[in-house]
Length: 390
Ligand SMILES: Cc1cc2nc3c(=O)[nH]c(=O)nc-3n(C[C@H](O)[C@H](O)[C@H](O)COP(=O)(O)OP(=O)(O)OC[C@H]3O[C@@H](n4cnc5c(N)ncnc54)[C@H](O)[C@@H]3O)c2cc1C
Image: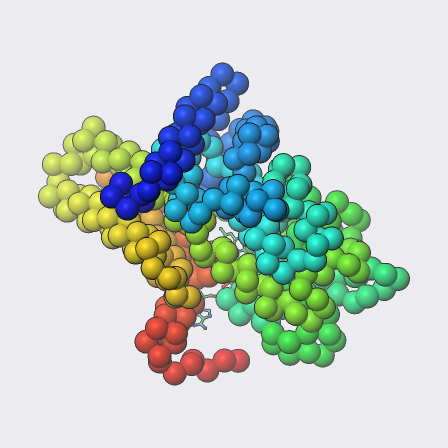
């Protein structure tokens, strides 16, 4: 959170503008989308959330951090955090195109051709084209350089064959950014390309995977001679590794900084549950709740420090480790507070706390697992020898 001492007058004016707009607009037809969606609950009020995102776009509140010349507001990092904080404070719904806005958009701005930028950025901003991320494969998760999905140029098009897995929101996406091997026989991070592939075509099959929560938010995606235009390679053929790493930098960066108010609201809900059901009398639960509050303060301090200093490559890894373990711990604490009833599913399905517990098991895996983040910190911050690579 941006502290009131360090915030400038223009930051405070920006905060007031965001807050007033959200209060005025999360009303009427959009009152019902408050608090809807998010990990484990992406199915909730989907059409209404899509309409809400387009409403935000029409008022210029999507892509606030993009430079003005690419259709954004050119908001500073501090303002982007303020936007996310106010968005969470207003209990506004989870966004439907965060992969386009937060990952692909900044990647195209950094690595795309002017034609690619002109073709795709306006539709991300207006929320008229939704995106998914085709990185992971059955044999290439943490080790992305093991990608084996292959693409070759044929008749002015890339022909893509292979399989991706855990592809979030692929069942709703219009396009996928795909890391594929375009130089036959190449090894590891050489010979990869970053392709933009339309999903609605005969060569693409999306098969949902059912999660612990019973919902399906990620998928297997099969490419069988799927096609995309030869021009839709970002950063040049064979340069996919650099582009893919650029995207991961955005994934682990500023987009996670504003989430703490959402966490704060979840913690407040667990504290309230403990008060209601008497768990707050238990000294161990009281201790755990206090530790959870302290963990939030640590994350806030880390975010403030990150904002007030030149960012190093490992701060994003530290932030990911802090929030992923804190949030997974909150899911466990919610089960402790709920007690025995947490062990059975109610007549209406899982309650919010059960869903939180189950979905937060994934927090330490996606966006780079905790082991991988610790490896990054070990090598880049502690200067430990590089671990043996396959
Ligand atoms: C909810 C969710 C959404 C996702 N969405 C997407 C998506 O939209 N697009 C996409 O491409 N992918 C997505 N993923 C996939 C995610 O990026 C991978 O699950 C993650 O990178 C780990 O890869 P893996 O599952 O293959 O596990 P593996 O890489 O097989 O790892 C298995 C275990 O070994 C550990 N490990 C692996 N290598 C090392 C090492 N070198 N040192 C120490 N430990 C190691 C890992 O930490 C892990 O505990 C998603 C995953 C989840 C859970």
